[in-house]
Length: 231
Image (tube, rainbow, N blue to C red; front, side, top):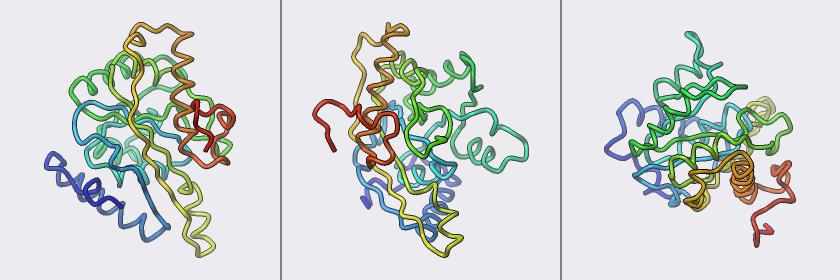
């Protein structure tokens, strides 16, 4: 791993550093964990981290490689008093709770404000965990948010973490991989995009994620990689 990318920045709270260290230790003990491309994560300034979503273990797998604190766009179903996962999101990820199945303008406004303050926002364009174990169709909300914010996107994918517990049940460690791609941005005119254009931008975002994944995880984007990328 890239030690520079994993080293905590002064702006990280003590609690955040401790939780990241604990999760890193657990992932390295419970899985065969490797990551690459951490140098692509900006150390400061606004950014939107876009990722695939396979399992609740996605968060820890990605969280432990981040060199800065992150604000997470999360489903409000986790915002319950006795939810451990919800507590983690509230305490260490400054969660912005979004109501699924509707246009949550309050959540979008909070997300735009966070990016405007120079924060890094994490969001999964699929909106929910994959039912197939591979990429599902992305929703346009991510493209809307990125287009309105003008922030660069950092694509990050993770796979293998969805097998963590089933492999441990057989006394095996799951092979977990995290890959961070190069940052990219939507064109300036995207700020005024309407539904048809947002659908095109969503497709571009999802194809970028697909290009970083093994073929078996590309799902509905398996035959729709970015031009020139045949990996």
